[in-house]
Length: 78
Image (cartoon, rainbow, N blue to C red; front, side):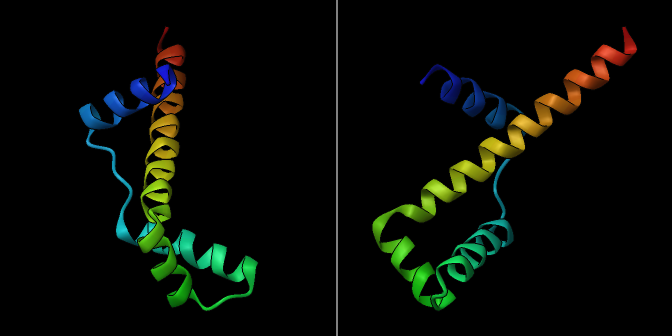
């Protein structure tokens, strides 16, 4: 819960969001893994809320990548 709050705050401050293209790419990847139609998977995910989870997961990963990048850059400057 604490990690989620921190990531959420950093994402908000840095305006980090998952793009529609990124979400679509992840849905496509999942559909291929499950050998199902992409449009059907996407519609199911919209109805059951999974699409929101995917969007949050992508945002969190992008935020972690941002923090790692900036942490590494800060350490190099020291």
